[in-house]
Image (cartoon, rainbow, N blue to C red; front, top):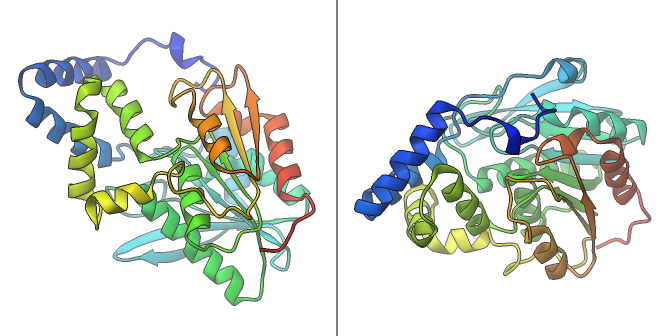
Length: 300
């Protein structure tokens, strides 16, 4: 399935019906349309299974559990317990095992890897999630590493996980470097892409932002603004790498460049032909991520 260009896939009947219903409702009843869209945006949907090609890496992980409020979050660890740690955050509707190619390369470089299935994803509990829960899971993993006397050599996130990585680093997670792959520049970018996906007219995006912030984020609009990495960048002393594929149809084309411009100590890697998810399996991308994380590091 991953080998199919998403632009050539035939739309699923349910998705076509959702787009038609949302577009029609948006034209005649904008308020209810925004309310429906906000609920859909917070709902994760079916959990992704472990792909056959990821199973070996998944099954040899040392599993654990952390608690985020009432939710049970499953964690995974690979590599030497004494090695510098790299934290991974998967994307929306995916799971930790989807980053197995990167896990293998990081292990080969002598690094320890820690990852998690976010709330409402994979083997973790919950029905709804948001980027701040992803960031909270990263902070919990980092706290455990530091408490044991270890070093957090870096954080890598894919898609929404990349946004979470930036938020966590900005808010004090002690990583030496970080990477965002196929990631939005902020929550508003995510809302714009989501609106396009479900057929909500773009003129209703501000309403969607307001409704989603009010209903699902503690702190409402103020918290939403904390999810904007261009206006509120990550720590300026932490080098970043942004990866963007020109054939990624699940993100805004200019987001990676906006992130790059907002983070002076950053590099930008642009690829082609990989799309939003297959970029995670690409050997050259994995090599670039490892090279970034293992470069000579300047202490914060």
